[in-house]
Amino acid sequence: MADRADLVAGTAFDPARFARLLSGLGHNALLGLGYAAHGPDWMELHLPYADRLVGDPDTGVIASGPIVSLMDMATSMAVWTRVANFVPLATLDLRVDYLRPAVPGRTVTGHGECYRLTRRIAFVRGQAHDGDPADPIAHVAGTFMFTDAA
Image (tube, rainbow, N blue to C red; front, side, top):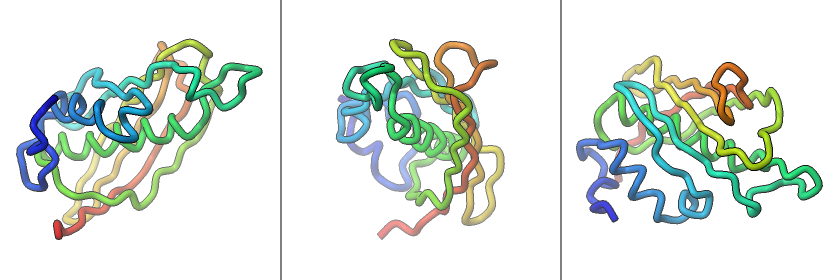
């Protein structure tokens, strides 16, 4: 497991290491979120298909909650990647537009991008797909507020 120092506000941010640390903790561990890739202002995480995430047993489709959580984490991590630091954030708004259900049995990939920063607000967007980015499951747009570490 990675050093918990990665979770201290103001420390240099290593997206891959941070994702590995979170994959063994709490909500992220329960969902099975894992690191996929990152760039200077974007992050990709995987949400592997699991029966416990299914919202409707008759169809086998993953519930919306795990996909929202995936996208909240991918976009949050995109902000930290862009500012190159772990800084406290609060999700102010995260709009999720569902375009279609995820295909049962497939891993969902969440791509988050931080496209604009102001002194106190980070603007993000992204999409979730299950294999083909040209055929997304959902689009997201949101804002995060930088908070003071207490």
